[in-house]
Image (cartoon, rainbow, N blue to C red):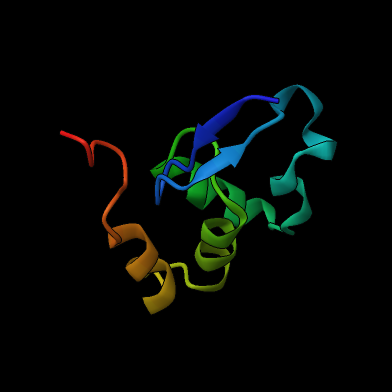
Length: 80
């Protein structure tokens, strides 16, 4: 399964667009209006946490927990 990153928070996610019914994002219920609003702002796959935040808060403010995780130092490049 292809691993990619969330278009909003860059969290690693596994995406299966060829079988969207089995993709994790297919489990987040979104209205057609939610889908249109999100698609107008972001392209690419998104993690469930971001999809739920965007659905529940259309102004697009990340939760404090999600913002902290997004801003946490990455281990990538730690040896440089």
